[in-house]
Image (cartoon, rainbow, N blue to C red; front, side, top):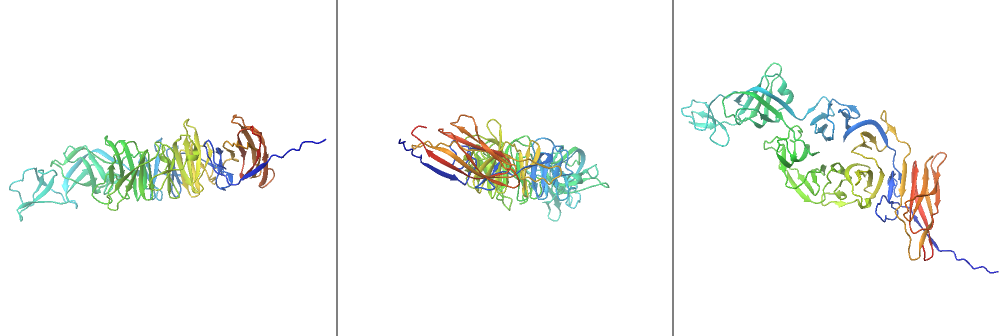
Length: 586
């Protein structure tokens, strides 16, 4: 009896040995993954699990990277290198910590700490009064000037050496009668000496060259911002300061004089070229509406109103662009300020004539100011539409693999050439992404919500729900604990081989290595039915790392997705697919 001869179905095989990253688009790129969890590009093109994190056991509210980690504890104390500092009583709420040399400055509390000499700490602002005071014109050496005339008209028949405050012009001028020249000669460098009844308070609060605001004076022209030229006092003598200016009255007493050194509250602040630079849009310290960029005096973060016509002065400039400020950063030696549709770059001048250049382009999304991070000389940030990379020209988008999900509230960090980005989706669900800029790979780690990053050496610290975590796994600190084996997951995009020849996947061969005790499980979803069907698994037993070839045989279908998951250290080496040609029917 003759039987019909069966023809073997033609097959072909392809192998994926180089794996891409996260690609959350409807059709993922070959070798990429529609979803990932706790995977890393450290060993790319292989796929591997991320490092185990460590919980430092500390609670914090804000972080700053310096020679050592600085953070604000939940008790309102500033910590440096995990040790408490004399700076205590900080307010609750959001903080901006910025470094300037050896100093740490905390906004909006407006306090500072010298990390090299922690006895040097205090408030940026200073206030004294209201207090009674005596005022007299004098020379810089303290020689008193007895004014005989305060009027607009030129005095008649004056004595030689008599002083006259000339009120005829827009500014008051001190003049002295010269019998030899037979005229009133303008006196240069005239000051006001203000004496107080207290002992030692003024030298403890203020310094020479401080820009202070004087208020509460009854004498016209005394109120306003002035520079302290000299000061003195102490336990044995009354306090005094020397400032520029002339009064409009010879009455030398004031009942309620107030002196203040004021510092603006910036929306965002950064350090650049030995200055702190800030921006503000809204109501300023004086109650007026402002939209401006400003900086402190050179090397002096206490003085923001020092305007003497010098290159070292403070500086401020109004801008005309609409909308609130959304971020600030020091990039390539220039202070850069962002709005959602603008980039403002400050050109810093050695002469003090700084200028602002404006570029209309994708700026920083509102609420994502902490996404501004420089990674390998490229600035990354979250714009209203996507994640952007900027090198000084126009920004370019780098987040197409993140798909159509709209994210907000981005917070960024960097280490090892990777950009860490924690964001919230439309439902305020958090996701932590990592972008390897050299390999141009995105990976989604997990749902950890990070509110602040700080890199110190080879460790990236993250603040999550008040907990201070070490993402690279440092666990040397007392009280630190490293997490157990990492649970990971990788899901392919929809794989469809419904070609004219009606190809289908008849087999997957998964090659991987597992550390001792680590496991792998495979599952398949057919025709987008929403159900994951188990396809078996493997666990590495014994000591050391084991290498495995794990087969998966899917059912016949129109399209499918493959999910690999497991626990413990894993490296995915390759996935081979056997494609089989079927009939004309699926």
